[in-house]
Amino acid sequence: MSRRSFLAGSAALVALGVAGCAPSSSPSGGGGGVTLRFYEQKQEVIAYFDELLRRFEKERPGITVVHDSTVAIAPQFVRNEPADVGCFNDNLELARYIKRGVLGDLSDLPSAQTVRTDIGELTDQYATYPGRTSVLPYSLAAAGVIYNKRIFAEHELPVPETWSQFVDVCDELVSAGITPIYATDRDTWTLWQGLFDYSVGSLVAPGEFFARLKELGTDVGPDSEVSFEKDFAVPMERAKTISSYFNKDHAVRAYADGNLAFGKGEAAMYLQGPWALSQIALVDPDLEIGTFALPVSENPEDRQARVNIDLGLWIPTASTHQDEARELVEFLMRPDILNAYNADNLAYSTLKDAPPQQDERLAGLQDYVDRAAFYQGAGTFVPTSIPLGNYLQSAIRSGNFQGMLRQLDADWRRLAGREATV
Image (cartoon, rainbow, N blue to C red):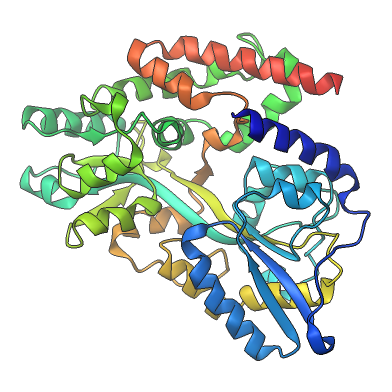
């Protein structure tokens, strides 16, 4: 974590306690109209949302929407000038604002009743505020093992359903002179998103584990009810085995290298999410690929997909245009708009009775989403002040994953002790 990020986060925490008390400085449009600021985090879909905002303006004369695409969210709250509507990845950063009650209650909106309960509950795993629905899940991203269908077909390899089958597939690929898994250790987020999260999720329920870990605080250790060292021991044995099938130069390869190499057919599998698919397609638009949930036990029914709420909608309590902001949220939550966005952007709808994702590259995960056989990645619950990605780099090189887990327990105790003194 950089010094700048640390200072910005610290300032945000101080300011959040009073952020909901002062009026918003959102500008008013000319001629008595209202101008809303819409904050959207994902740079790659800014143009997409711009079209939606212009459509909203046509349907609702008198409201103008300015697309605020600044990268950081914290400065908006530090200055007490948050956008009127936010569209943000649901994670620990957003959780800070939820916990402090600076995001309004959306539970009375008609669209709130259309969200799948099992998806809506995912945001509660990070944080809640009493009596409020602070975020409406907008887009669910599901991730798994991306695989090259041509390579699998040429070597008559099945999509593995158990851990032993997965290892057998990797061994067959090695025997055939093919790199089983392309890894990009240089970008550490790819390690915790892929290797760490995939190995943990089907063996440990991350939401429940981290909820209990928070309760234990400074009491976390080898003899506590839950701990990294105890609960993640088997998953990290799996991770250690998986890392033995990586490309030999994995330590110096970055995310862009991985997309290029996989697109060129240099490996059979890739531990990445749907965000990589468009980059792979730039290399070879005709490459036949699919996705499956990594099996880490001998029971096929244990398999689950790694998911995250890629975007969620919220309205700060500081906005002085609450009614207009709620109109915009209702517009964006309309099934014809929300479902179309997710279909176009390789994600899954968060609404009840939504159509399936039609992209064949993601077809292998649809059943898991339908059955709610999914989990939020364990790495997403780890604060950025704990360098999980760097620990994984070291563990892969040394083979000492148990030492990494002991370090995670120690870091958790340290942070819990610090929070207790604040």
